[in-house]
Image (cartoon, rainbow, N blue to C red; front, side):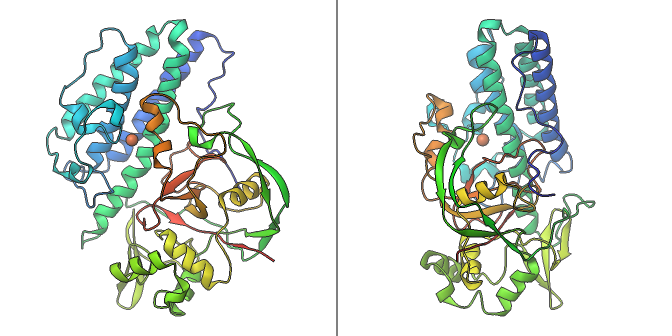
Amino acid sequence: MRSTIMRDRDFSDPGLKRAPSEVRQYWRDAFRAVRSETERRASLLSPEDQVVQSMPDASPTKWHRAHVTWFFETFLLVPHLPGYAIYDERFPFLFNSYYVSAGPRYARPQRGLITRPNAEDVTAYRAHVDRAVAQLIETADDAQSAEIFNILEIGLHHEQQHQELLLTDILHAFAQNPTFPQYDPAWSMPPSVQDDSYVAIPQGIHQIGHDGETFHFDNERPQHRVLTQQVRIGRALITNGQWQDFIADGGYTTPTLWLSDGWAKCEAEGWQAPGYWHDVDGAWHVMTLGGSRPVDPHAPVMHISYYEADAFARWAGKHLPTEMEWEVAARHNLIDDAFGIVWQWTRSAYLAYPGYRAPDGAIGEYNGKFMINQMVLRGSSLATPDGHARLTYRNFFQPPARWQFTGLRLAEYP
Ligand SMILES: [Fe+2]
């Protein structure tokens, strides 16, 4: 599956030439599909599962379900649906995440303390907002509909981001449980290509970034020219077997392989292997969405921090690709498993593209204010919902983060 960008469903192109009734139908269907996918993911969890917050960076399932609902209520319904009344005046404080311009909010590390509203109350909140959004889609006048559907579309992509977090966060919670609960007993690792070869990326000037024609986040713009040097990129993702070689060769006990910050973190945390790896009778196992499973040496490694990816690259005598190298390689269809298994760390800092400006208003807080102290990841993961991935998508996390489905591929210079 070389560089397959979109899987199944892609609602990023409503088709401006369609009749207004068809456009409304399109958004009605898209809204229903995304909202029900969130509920499908949550349906495998009990109300108790939905409350837990296992660390400050992770949020409870119930909070995710309510927060994405608050997003539609705050940014779509309140400004655009005449007569809409906020479902519960206490909810904006509880379920605003980081939007300073949308008002005060509860402290993120304490989201697990919100036992009320309970999961059932959140279901009712979701149903209320679903009905109001359906009404807005039906009644939006033509003059306003472009803006309304634009916000609706951002809200859907936002909810899809939280669908992925819902899984990564519950996996972290379940990994703290010594009985290793199964989120989904039928879960299996997606198939992947094994290939040790490297392929040359065309040298010279290339365009990267989104052309603006279909949906994209603001951080993918403007499209701009970049210069690639002579470089080769690994066709395949790095596997657990290769990672075990790194461990056996003292990867976690050799400070010269590590960045200073990375080594400090490795020592402080006592890292000896990727996140969720644990010893069972002398063999490595890993906590997955299907519970604890033996580490498969042929599968791509996941749950590694940027620091570990960087140390591995140094050990291998290679580098992590830059995000522009990754995008050029993917555009030329040179790499396998770019999407759908693990996000791939790049050695690019998460910074604004030349000429980037954050949008006005609260939506401007979506991406721009996080452009500091984080590294870019490219591709998508096994937890990314269908239709959410893009060639130009820029995910970003802080270098120590390990609870996402994060892996790597390497690059080499002559
Ligand atoms: Fe959010």
